[in-house]
Length: 66
Image 1 (tube, rainbow, N blue to C red):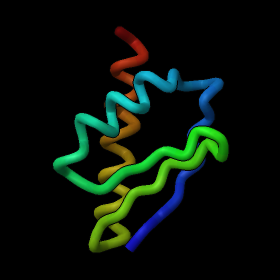
Image 2 (image 1 turned 45 degrees about the vertical axis):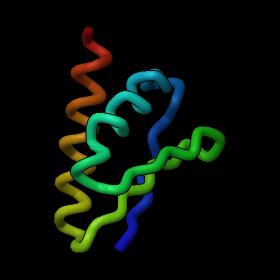
Image 3 (image 1 turned 45 degrees about the horizontal axis):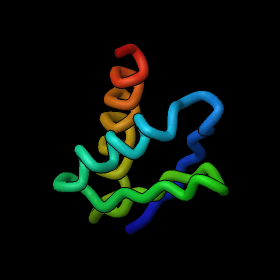
Image 4 (image 1 turned 180 degrees about the vertical axis):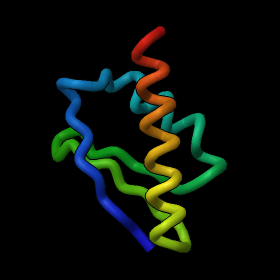
């Protein structure tokens, strides 16, 4: 299963998005299309995709604060 989310690069730094994806690579398959500003999360269940996305965004926000 795959789900796409819009993540605006003018709000979040690309380096933080890439770092979060790298840090989450053992959790789920995650890709970011910079030109389309789309984050794609692949997982077995839709509910878990939402949870992974929420945790990923919390992590990105924490990187933004540092």
